[in-house]
Amino acid sequence: MLTYRRETEQKVWEMLDLIKRERENTVAEFRELQRWLEEQEKLLLARMEETEKEIVARRDECLAKQVEELSSLDSLIEEMEEKHQQPSSKLLQDIGRILKKYQVKKPSENPVAFPLELKWRIWDYSDISVFLKGITKQFRDTLKGGLQLQKANVILDPETAHPGLAFSKDHKDVRAVVKDQCLPQNPKRFEIWRFILGCQGFSTGRHCWEITVGSEWGWAVGVAKKSVNRKDLISLGPEEGIWQFGKWKQGYSVNFPPGYTKLPLTTDLKRIRVSLNCEGGQVTFSDAETAALLYTFSEAALAGETLLPSFFLNNYACLTLAP
Image 1 (cartoon, rainbow, N blue to C red):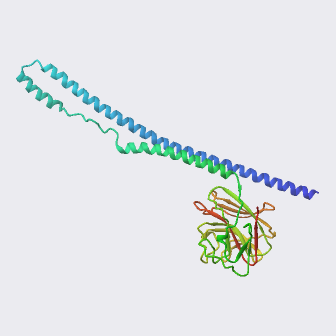
Image 2 (cartoon, one colour):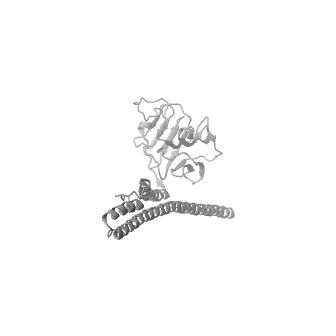
Image 3 (cartoon, rainbow, N blue to C red):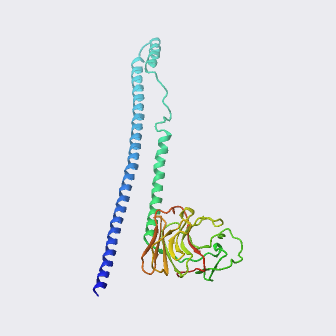
């Protein structure tokens, strides 16, 4: 009884400590996001302020020029009025001198006070506002969708199945067979490795699905890029767009030979959960019966890719997808 109590207390403290650390991480990430957004806001507003100052300076320069021209014209008119009482011969001589003195120029009908570059800069701010509105909505939708883990109902895609695999009518069970079947050619079909993919692809959000595995070795579950090479002999790892966990020769490993990593697991697994975090670039494998972490691919190159549930079977292995 005392041992059970100690073990229970230990598990509780471990879970509480994990929640505490994740709370701190969450607060830190939101604070960093707020800091970065405030910094970007200040930079953009500073650019707008500089443009405002330039507009005002251009306006003042234009108005000053107009005032100068009007003042010159007023002086000309005033002097002409003073001279108009003189004899005609004298007046004509003075007019020539006066006009030369003031160097009268025809005012521009439409003076270009604001250059085209400045107008385009203002348009750019308007376009940035539209961009910010769109990206903010996208961020909100992505965050809202990503905060909720989506449990996927994975269905096997028969068009991708290697001829050495057989699957049930409901496309939920798949097993390796001794002799390859005669199947029609299909650009989606795997021809070398015994793979089959799920129908639904994921490019955003957080998703998970579970698979019941048999006692046989020679299977792997995970995700693959939609663009994965299906026709040639490739290495079964992240470099080819495949992230998987499986059982190989009585041991569990990530990826498959020759570049596999054997894991020190002694538990006989019966049910695997695959968790995909598209934005986080993470693929996680867990024991679905105990929630124990088995392995995580972090910083995976998932951005901009459509990812499909992937299943590899060999050596009479069989897999069953959870409903």
